[in-house]
Amino acid sequence: MKYVTGMATVAAMLMATPAVAQDMDADGDELRGQTVDVVFADGTRNSIFFGSTGVATISNTTGQTATANWFVRGDELCLQSSLATECYDYDNRFVAGRAYSLASDCQTAVWTARAVNPPRQMVAPTTGERG
Image (tube, rainbow, N blue to C red; front, side):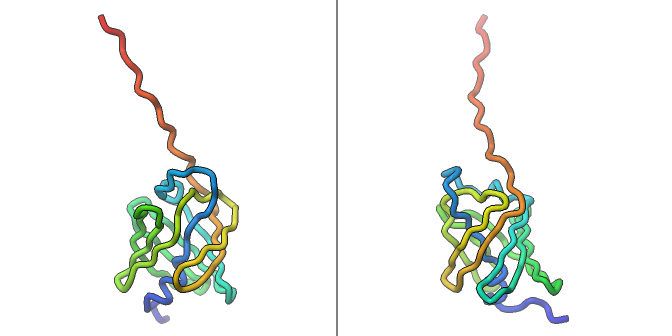
């Protein structure tokens, strides 16, 4: 079995960018430990598991896998292999089960997160009693 090679193949497996007006703090936390399914215009299907340590595992339907580092830089979600880096517009959080048509410089694909982590709750610090 031939290992997944070339950035074009990895990039084709990497397409992931949410475009949803839910939370303007798009920092990738909703993706940690979650999987996004990707369907390309030619019918190719892949999935991307966004590991909590910043490593993504990209799998295709034939069982081949590739890894890439994933990170958020400004308003972009980026995936970086040893060959290249692909970044996608990332202004808002993914919503589980909602399909989004997303484009990179290479191609367009439909992305659907299987599940997402809830937004982190910001808790105001409490002040103790003086006394």
